[in-house]
Length: 438
Image (cartoon, rainbow, N blue to C red):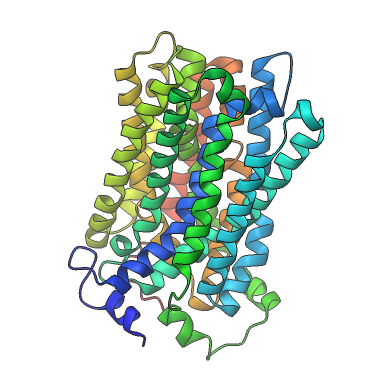
């Protein structure tokens, strides 16, 4: 076993001293997910600014809906990316495919940053935006499950969720950075310049970060579980996908858990825009409030992950769904009318902690449900299909549902998802804490 793997899987956990090689493994495995979520977050946060340039319409709300539709279209490519990239990671290794996904993500961000406006090239502008989002979606279809498998297979058994938690913390950090970048961009670039070129700067930053991420992923060691298993089985790519038929319950659990990504997109991506629409909250204030919420998420994830290594995963899955079922409507109702900054921060932070309950354990639960030979595919395909249906449509549906009946309709939608989730966890989801990753 390589030196870095020994260092990572040795008796020292993340709570102790960290060797440079172990930190490189953690950072290299997490940075792609960080960049992916930064790029998706920036799009969601700045959609209200560049919507009129790329998707012009007589009604500003129509332009915004069109912009969020392209946000949703990016998710349509996720199942394709999962079907292509996940079996390749199971056959050829996690490390190689991690480099491929980060290159594609950065290229998509660069295309958006350099795309001419509708006034300059007409219908080609939204077409190019759609193609860039499809490329990012294809990349994202492989990134999550490959990275989460990589980190969990490197992690020690006793503190697996905690050791793998940087993967999910990276989501929060990416939103934190994206929100800060969006806030600084809207605050310091004049409105006219912001609308014409300023919104492009955050996308250029995303492209540059992808180059750095590719550099960091050079030289990472393959996981011990994959190295051990690749000699025992020689499944074809088609055979890997076919093997998933043996795990229908596990695939269904992944799908249901990922349905709760709706809450993530509503709270940590769409909430500032929603508060601006229904409560008149200034966008820069909304971004600032989101920074506090995301910081709470980043603290909550490793804390809850550490506890899950002691008491189990299911209490946190159930707790998150139950909290959103009970409190989505009262929390969103607080934003309607003339909302203060303090009220927005409270709503955002509470929701972020509910999300942290769920996200602190899902990557590890997913990894513990499947054997090594199909682990990436078992996680990735149902995850990406669900993300395409529920995740990308969350901002669009929230805007539409609010138009129909305000926060009650949004809460009803979230409530149905939570009810299905709770039933699944009570009757189907096993407690996976302590399962070895063969």
